[in-house]
Image (cartoon, rainbow, N blue to C red):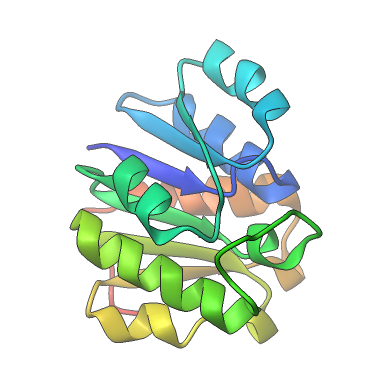
Amino acid sequence: MPVIVVGADTVYGSAVAEALSARDGEVRAFVTDPESAPPLRALGIKVAIGDVSDASHIAGASHGAFSAVMIAEAGLDDRERSFAASYQALLAAWAEALRDAGVSRIIWVAAEEHLPEPLATIGVPGAVVDTRHTSTRQAAAQAARLDDLAAIDPA
């Protein structure tokens, strides 16, 4: 089933996208940096480029995806976010986008202190990959394993 990685132009995001592309199924990536697209496309990943804080951009790229892997780093780094004045506003935009796109599962890749409240409120089953105690490679493998599960408990 299709999966999208929002923030695939981050350290964790590119590792997750690569891990997901190693198996069967459609993988999509949402990036802000256009220069990060060619290596992802070389892996067979469909890439959307836009403002990570624009709910309409995220919703459009996520439409028809079963799972969304959300990379907290994309909301916390120094990239331009025109539609969100704060990290909490960005999380609210992501929640709106995923709800509008009809995503059925959310996998959150973040350190515990950056776990989202708004995403938990949209009623979509989810799981967390806590980056505090895992390497980038381990986190990517864990996200891919979670996406492969038939069902996950709500986060």
